[in-house]
Length: 462
Image 1 (tube, helix red, strand yellow):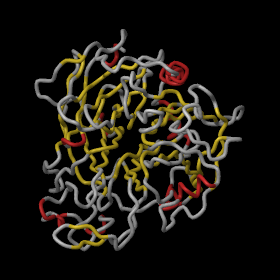
Image 2: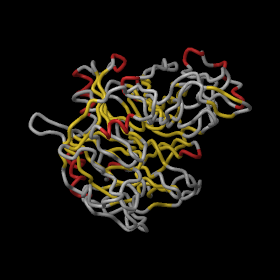
Image 3: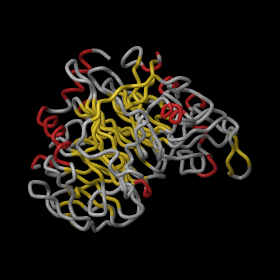
Image 4: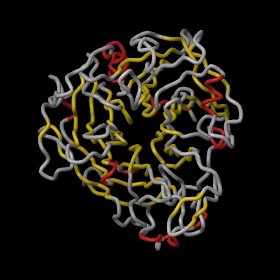
């Protein structure tokens, strides 16, 4: 990664944004709003209004446009896949937005090739990572949408990663690409049923890179040095090029990848797991001991080198824990704000309703450190935190993934939680929350309905 790219990435996060982001840590400790509270706190956007289209409730003055629906035909003749998940909005030419979206499908899901994959021949087989038996490929991957915000119009949409499975979250890079994470661990020869026995040809459980400026599907190259496990999200420190990785398992680790050449991930690198100094194998989940990870207490961290990161057994986290790695309860969303990484653990806490952590990255003066900044309980508005992003006004914006009604929850620097959007119409999780490069549009997916929404309104009033 060159210095200009790093400067551009840092410029995306304003100094006001950073100061407020870091203030969240102290303010969130133990602070929660009633689970029944439906209005935003003073200074935000006011109560939500019922949506006559029954898709998403928003505050007065806000609106959304549906910019993608599963099953619609794309410009390449394929169909928009279902189960939209992680997403990033990157700057394109002439003010356009490049929206890259993961699709969390396995080979029995709703894929881009239509009924019985009759459109499979429309895509060159070189761009399909796993063709299965030749007729049933992996149906995950990514779509890329070129969006013109001034006209609220989709310019072009195409399949940009094909043949992968259960592409859950991931993260954007400062050098202009998307890291798409497979949340699975499957071997060649593993079978599943669809009109008979179908076999996998490739190993799964990897990260794939999708360039934002691509106009055809990306070459599906698994980044094996970044580890083979049930990946969830990724976020990049633009200062160093180090990539932080989460894992969606109840006994997960938090990883970081040190590339040999920042910005050039196919050159390989070193994978490490986080550990708390002086507390080998520490358990942050607070399941058995509610005081094992107290809120607002800093723990100095160290990083453990991992061996055999592209192994045949799904045991990387177990071996890392045996070395002293710290346990998290389903690490999911990751969000970088200058100097810190924020992590959600979806089922952490005594009630297993979720936790949020801040990882302060090391500097020349201080070592890295970790603390838990929020833990949901029965009185919290937020439940089961998943994808998250930092807003331009300094609040964390968090997607819920609960068994019922899911919302977008904001957390203010003074600790209040509020709904910025709500989905009372289905039990679908919300996913992929991200802001446009100019911070004027908030994008989000309603996963089970296969919808991608572009939300506009008076965000500048926050």
